Every structure is written in C-alpha cells, then in structure tokens.
Image 1 (cartoon, one colour):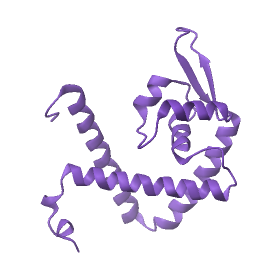
Image 2 (tube, one colour):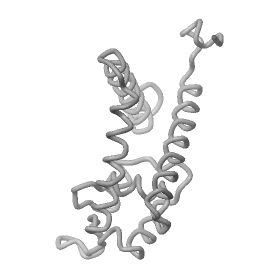
Image 3 (cartoon, one colour):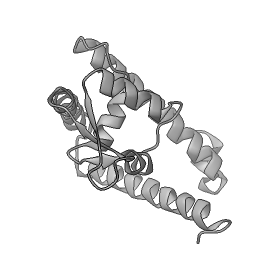
Length: 161
C-alpha cells in the first residue's frame, strides 16, 4: 500500500486530476482496441467520445464543447473528420445560419450501439456484486462533484465552495 492509500488526507486535487487523466487514456486505449476488433480505422477513440457526447441529441458546436472534455484533442478538427467520414451530419441552424447543428448519422449510431454492447458486457463481467456497483456509483458521484466544483471555480474565480 502506498502512503496515499494509508492516509487519505494526503490526496490532492492535482493527484486526482492525474488519476482521472490516466484513467481516461486507458479508456481511450480500450476504445482503440475495440475499433481494431471491429475493423474500423476511419475514426479515433477521441472522435468516438464526441459521438457519445452528441448521442441522440442535435447540438450546436458550442453545446457539444460545453458537454464534453476531450484530453489532447482538437474538437474542431475532430468534428471536421467526423463529418468527412460520414459519422456526423452538420447543418446550419434554422434560427441562426452562422451556427452549425450536429447530429449522428446512421453509421455513427451503429458504431455507438456496437461499442455500447461491448462495454455493457464488460461492465457485467467486471462488476460482480452490489458492493462493486455501489463503489462505482460513489466514484461517479465524487467525480461529478469535483467537476462541478472546478467548473464553479472557473466561472466565479477562487473558491467555489
């Protein structure tokens, strides 16, 4: 056990952010592996995450960027690639022709469904009991609170609490 595991008081926000970043990168590695298994080579794991962020909605580019966080990626470049590869339809907004609206194509929906099925199976195999389900829920809720705290600090400066 490390000293961090022994003394919970030594964990800092910086250490949490680093663990989140590493976990995110490992998840992208899992997505890359799944894309290879599916024989898909025209989309990156970061672009897959954009697809899941859009989901069943029709979003503006601004809404998309506000909903998601894309480590090490350029969202504008990735959106152009997704449009060019046939995963995202981009159209002018009816209200404001300068604003683009984004929605998934059938190709993207099928890919998201295939990846969701694999990850649902993975979840069922790795979360073996109610205790592990509860732990995942607690982890999610803690991370969500951190996200809100950090977002509040950015918007309002200094201490958000």
